[in-house]
Image (cartoon, rainbow, N blue to C red):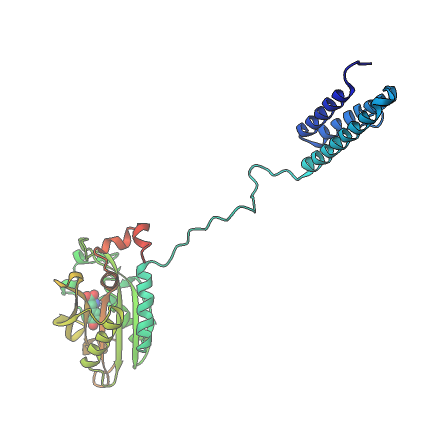
Length: 331
Ligand code: DAH
């Protein structure tokens, strides 16, 4: 039997026991440490307890108190180790639901879509319904029924994207006027919004694909004054009352008389064309089976990109198709 100080031996037994439980990483290691220190038959605490009997009576009390403290400390270390290794292990790639979430990046509607939606809303309040037509058109709807004969320069292949002799990517949404009137009797009050295609050289205000809004109103007694009223009301509602527009006499085969509508551009030093308009030509009415002695009508076609640009102060039409999130994020 060792002659070392029995109290000191209890102290090192306690610290070895605490270290063993602290180092245990799984329930097997915890159980091994439990048997080593707290085992009923051969445990090291058990032997330390046996030793009490061999001590001098005067030393028994102090030894007994120190033994009880060491035993309590080791039992507590066992409990702590047990609950630690029993906690379900968290895999490295598991989701920690207690972490704050990552906000998903949300997109939003493209400025042109926002513009189109606003135009639909605005003209809806003037009583216009929405119609659609195909982007791949036939020459009848893109030209012939619009009073544009085969000899007209607007039909030239250098100014259009023909697909075959008889079909092309539509160059204007005026095609939808024909499709509507072919399919319903007057009165008519519709708009059509969509893409149109022209082989134009891109610059600040031109792009080979752009969007138009077409408007058509046919009824008994519709006049040029109605056209100007609707377009002025529209311009001040959409662009603001401070944006000036003007009407210039012009020519389109499908209207008589015809005007071009300009808006004073950013900076106020130049006019930019917003679109064309006019009173529907009697030949167009005849082509779709309407009686020009019964009804009159006005029509207009406006460029949506330019309206959007004027409204938001956008300087270059090409920015609208570059998909730069720094640009798009501003709308
Ligand atoms: N389609 C013409 C263009 O793209 C614009 C236009 C002019 C539309 C007169 C119309 C109209 O409906 O009546 O240049």
